Image (cartoon, rainbow over all chains, first blue to last red; front, side):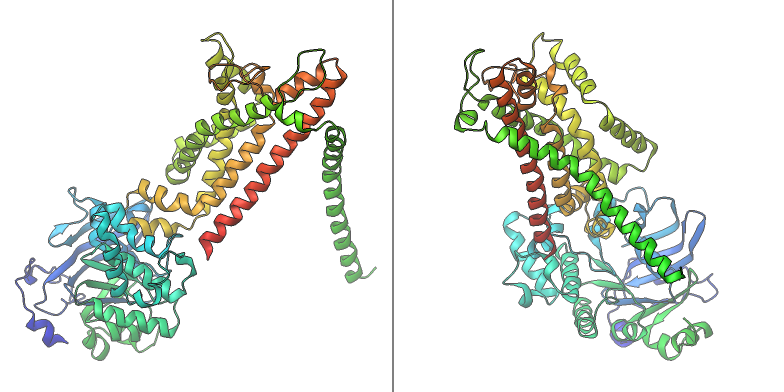
Length: 285
Length: 282
């Protein structure tokens, strides 16, 4: 795994040496060296009102890989994920400090258009949330609201997104029926198709399989495996086997802090921190 | 009495009281309906639906103009009130957490409780006094004022019931807040909003007071907005206070038709809601 990543050395937009982990007491290690960075946070602090939820998170997300966030409930991994496309903006009384860079520019900076950001950084939620519309309209939604393509191109784009999410064969004859009639697993893949239709650069997945049965989970995981060829994927999961199966690098969160971030293989076989090992071996959490 | 027996006794008593309350609530309704049916049905005939009123002293004729007028007034009121009510409801649900939102909400509730005669006087001052004559538009305006708060509050409440995850899903695809509200939240709440609108229609269909100084009455039918127009409630009132036996019978028939209108709106509300819900959930 690491070989492929190191082989794909590219000129990083942000030099790897700019990683702010130097002053971080080794808590955050850089992800696999050499991969081009897509997103990066620098000393990100986040609070809900008076309650601080994230402390000094510095983390790098390389391009076209799967990065998994693991950690016990309430550790801040979902909150951090939602900082990456500013979904927390809609929650009143929240405060963000620090930087989150997407291709080198700060998404919390004054020049950022949140709507454009969210098109570039798509999101799939824990509980599938298809709109009460037809299957076709669900996938076409993002294309239509963003005016991304001519009306005549929409059917083709919808088909492409549904094929990419491995749903096409199951729904091609019933595109105009309500999305609410799909099974839970199909609904979640529909939500993935919906997110893919607008061609995001990064896809954030917040425990996408937590409400799915094992077969549907396998399908989504296979999908993630195929999607990382084209997209940068960040996935929050409670399921450590899942993190081990789908991701190249894994970040372990604990009490609002990033404990460590390294190649998945290393995190699961030889973690740098005792506490990570304890969590992974099931001693707590 | 041991505890179990006591508990059973109290439980039975409460069920009995509930049943009694239902009977007390329904009995007057039943009698009103039965009385209107009995008095009105005998005077209903084809002429009543198709003919204009006859001049005083001649018997026969009908209320065709008043029925058409009521539908016309309801249409005017709907065109004015539905967009305002729905959009205001969206505002309250999406952005109404600030103090201004509470003010709007409170105002809507007060407006909902204002006696309809006062609304009529307001519309009179607004749309009749300046032009010095009664008009269908003034009547529609008065009825519209009554519809707005009902529609606003139901829209807000129904939107609040739509899962927030749908809004998030829409925002995550790059929708603006307003876009998310109108393209996802409102369609999801549509069955309920339709019900609210139809309830508002049923409520105003029978209003007399707001029309007395606005739409006034008309022995003929005119589709012009700036002319007085007849309506069932006002026609019923006029006929009921007149000293002619034939008019009294027609007033009863008119009352029956009016009750029928309200009934149809209520049934329609049920049917539309169920149909739309089925479309959404399967």
